[in-house]
Image (cartoon, helix red, strand yellow):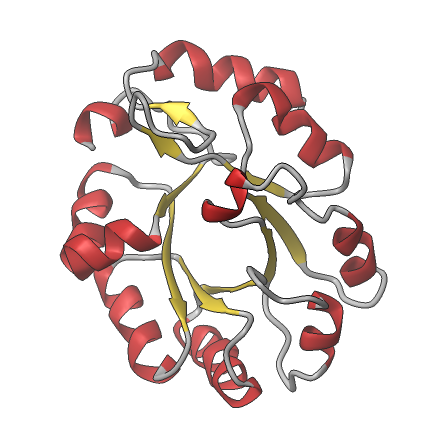
Length: 203
């Protein structure tokens, strides 16, 4: 991990995400480790489904600037989640993986999130008919002033599509050689790749 992070330029447009598998494996110590090496924004991708008050506190104390909750969680959980994120002054991100109508879910909340994540899951990448539902970006944004992230099946050469469709943030997985999912290979030259990618998207 440190080998990769030290290659990434210190740019405010770059967000480091401690992904869900990483958080499950390493816990909040893993987030603290990233914070030792990265001064910018860090997302703890917990996909909270219950116990939002405690889980947001865990992420905050570990040094995260943002945390995710699962959009499929009960409305009560998501309201606790967004309210506690506000209390700790960190970004709330609701991940709409598996949610058929993200706009409807957001409309039911008393407190709106900072980010809505339009997400096609890693396992869904095996289905050629599964796509990132970019149409949901405009639906959500037509009603709410929130940031929109997109994730799932993104490669460096198609990130521009995400921004063209209105996304504020595009999430790229770091993957191992031979892994079936899309993303950036862990042995890539990040010192060259990341600045080139930022130049191409023009943000």
